Length: 351
Image 1 (cartoon, rainbow, N blue to C red):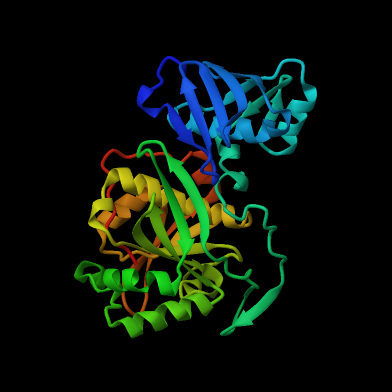
Image 2 (cartoon, one colour):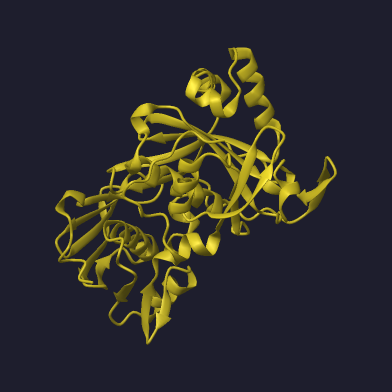
């Protein structure tokens, strides 16, 4: 594919990574990575060849990663980038050492499925190491001890088809109680969640989640506009665990899209894969993400099919007949499911 020939001029600027002052600017074949007002890297694209012309040698990895994120985002069918570094073997070795490139026939090659697993570009606390493995028992369930809860922002990603940034942050009761209260009292949401009530009920509800080591409540935003509420859980300690062979780092999720303005294909193809991306990046030992939508919710299941989830089986919770769905890490990254796939994808509120 000749990526330079098919470039859409509407997407000339891409905000890369979690650092909002880093941007990728393109003018036909010329690609520049700008950080803090200075050119970090200058590159030229022709087909799948990306020549690194110059820039700060110390910023090579950061610059190439930002440029590759933008180019793969602008061109979803671009399946690799072959770097032309000139006579700089140390630069190629640095890219390979960082897991950004694989040396093939003497050339560093960037694959999108490897790039998208580099935590530095999307996690706010990317330097946090994996939590050491140690087991505990909760309510008769043996499981790994979970790391301390993060606070504040945890993830952000630029969405080129929206020209906006999606982000997730941990719920702050003082800031978010009224918002979650309004969403939980929406009749359409309550039909799935059954959690309508007063402010005190919802304050206690969120407090329990924040104190529970296996749960993580998040608020999703596009730019500065909050649109949804998410509950992430470790499956081994969750009510879903008795219904399948839960692995130590399997994770699951519930969602409320609280604002009508953020429904529809363009938004679901942004927030759904971004949420999955966050869970896979948060701990590299997470190989599967599970869910348990109502078995009768045909539209929900079709949406999850499009997102890469496999239907495993139906089973009975005390409150509903559910379908166990599962997304594999290898499927998500190997099939590049962070990009839109279905033209008619929509998603209703799910729990």
